[in-house]
Length: 604
Image (tube, rainbow, N blue to C red; front, side):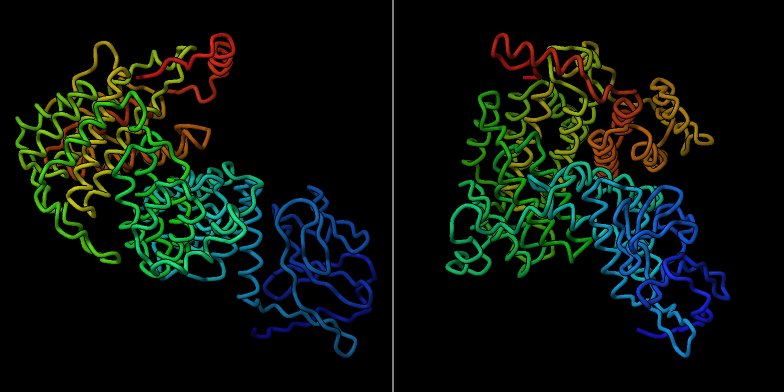
């Protein structure tokens, strides 16, 4: 550490056990305390809100801020009541004069601030977390290396800490973080505001929880990390085998080793065969895997924690398509297994390769008439949806081309959602259920581009079946899915955002229907701050608003025949005020269950 010593004056001017204010020639303030023959110096600005610590009281070596009662150990700077610690400066007495070193030991300061930031996340204190993140940024790290700017390191800590402590693996907070980082990089939302939203979402979900562990030693006396040396170093199939057998610790341990050797590409290759078998946890298996891969690519130092968390989530996930209501999807997957798909028998992409998977070649679009007919079958119900998908695959249609149409159908389904479902007390159904069809279709397309033809085809069947299964969510008279001819490239003067902020669904839809393709893509960017900061209060609702907007934007951007369905779906979902805690429904469902022992009403 460099030295930058300044003279604070004679020791005689520092009365024992009393805070003394000293300033340097730049106006920086130091709260100094003579105690036990040593002068302790702290930043005079309380780390909470900047009030002067030198105005506080000292008792037993603890300096108390006079404004909010935060307390600091003068010997260490640690906060014993309140929040984050205060910076402490080295001092010495030389020739009867007190000297202070203003230089900052960057490595030590990073350790101090990261520890404080992690404590803030554990306590679900996003304001403190942001203050620590900004202090980290002020050290000048990463500014030239990333589009996240000076908050890069704070976002990275958030990803690593959130993944490490997520009780049941990768969750909505981490998925939200992935999308918000992308939005910051695009200039859609300010970094500081995005960080607060993500820190609260991650902190709330795992508040007060310690690290989940490293997948070692919880099931037996001999840890999976010890057993793993008996197997091949990084054989991806072993991860899926462990997941299928619910050997959670082994799956997590194998994933950590695989990431170390093969990185995110190895994790993708290991987990794709598993997520392509079933619809897991209402689509979250594939949705969260896609987000985990994006987050791991962005923060390579956190990749092992992030992808281990994704593996843990899959290990706990319910295989929805193994349940009785999804019999048609299971039958379609069985028929698909017998089809000789083009290129499906070729060797899968080697683990660690960064190129597109073999399925990417099958992305030629359907012609408009074929696509319209296919989408109508997808929207008609689970059975017609999966049977049509298998039929088109048998004819040689590419899975990715079908997924484009399925994603569009999912947007139409979301726009058709019947709000009456959210008023019922006997049914645990809400619009968030239908957003999963959109986000799953987009995740299936993203994963499918790196998958084998067989895996991509399975994902297409799962996505189509999911959209069809949600048919009962439609309003009795669904709106038309196609927008009228667009007339302008941009909504005048932020009119669309104003309509959204006023919760004027009809007005927002009318403006959206005037936009051309370029205007619609710009509209997603215009609405991003509303989705992230204003549309909802509870983090789970914010996370769905953000990931649904991002999925719909990606679907529109990749659609060779885009229309207004994607933007209309977003507006129909995100503009209305939604009930975020339905206390009457919770009570009614619980009472009914205690009375008759039957599940609540649902979409299927």
